[in-house]
Image (cartoon, rainbow, N blue to C red; front, side, top):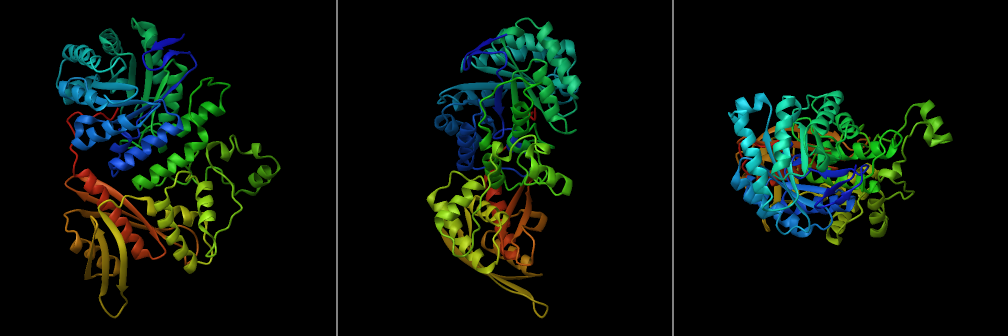
Length: 525
């Protein structure tokens, strides 16, 4: 049955709306944070990918969150730009309405908890009081836009009868998208199918709204629960790039989209995603957040299309379809015959980056990365694709406040390690020389000397990008300060330089997080 929607017109029964919440729920992941420029980059990439709705943030959370939603609303053309608000917060709704005002197409998304557990211990409200807020909140939201979404936080653990009453109240008050999240990742596919079937059969007005699925991955069932929801009548999918999000994350956009594309025989639904862009957006997000996807991650992991078993290799060589249910090219993986070395030029370097999934590269960004590539090629006999990915990702990370310039180290078994570090802090170059218990400690002490801070180092991990003693090091650093946690990454042929870059990346992210506060009853739906 077709549905009339204020932003999408008449929606056919097989049309699925892709609602991306990478910039809101995804950014709530422990250790994640993005500055305004990075959020704008992701928003533009999502628009090019073909998502239908971009949930840009929670405007009331901080002035920075309001600014990012407002700027995305002004910049993005094509997708609907959505702002989040609490159902019971008049200021929340007003703030969200103001933030999305410049958008070509806009949506206001409001939420309140509906499960007995949440109402008793988090809201400390009776069910009738929650129902009253649902009516008032959605009616108020309609003053700012005709496109209003309402979410029943912890919907999968809400009593069926009360959930029906809440959905009916939200529809009557003006909501035209109803989201039933599995907030804590507790549900099974059968649970989600039963919930959506019940709502569509029992709630008056259900035929005139879009039902939405938002599933968390605590039991590893987020994508399966989303597919089950679609088959039971949901027509909007809430998801994130790489599946990032609170705790174990959300349903991964790339996995859902390729499941729909690959299994049209049992999932006959349409969407507007440009699938060859999936890898590029995945890598962009990994670069910005400092979190790599696991090697065996479906669709975008580096082993997703790798075959080591002799039997499998033989089958793929004879016919790729024997062991590959989709082509690597369909999600953005490309093959290149170019082997780069110290004699390679800028054009070849740009082409290699393009084949690795980095299509949009600014000249300044390219030049900086090319300089580092030349230095690496002089010192390393073979430059692998993984080396170029690590190098370019490191050069693309946030250096807005603190930028690495140089590091000179003296260490060994006969004397204390000494580090002379030069940084650029807000455009000014500064130098410090410090000692430490080993070269890494000396380098980190130099950072603290040049930029005093109270952050505590809680994780320091080093891995090799490729094989061999001349491999680049990839370092992850985790800093914690007053309950805020961030991860930073760095890469370099020198392990200590790699560690220093990772520490600076984490500090830059921490500076962004310092400007934020989390409102009570923050949605993890």
